[in-house]
Length: 89
Image (tube, rainbow, N blue to C red; front, side, top):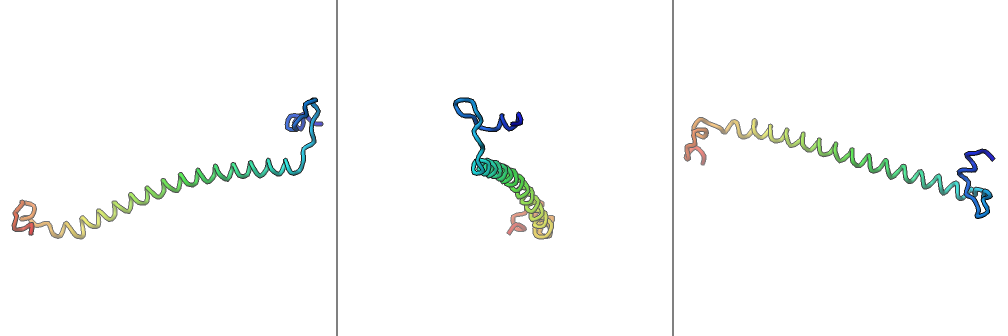
């Protein structure tokens, strides 16, 4: 038996290698695949959250700029800037 197979193969109490069953190998493969899938999901979720936050901040900047230049700025007269109460109504 190759050295790598002796290391990976479970041993009995007497120290003899126990034969690996197909079910056990399949379970190991499935468990490792599940672990990789979970790790990928966590990484993708973190990256998606960051991308969503960045997009939300960019959208908020655009809305604020459009509101300031399209709605507020045209209403700013010299009287409003001077603080005239009649101009603020």
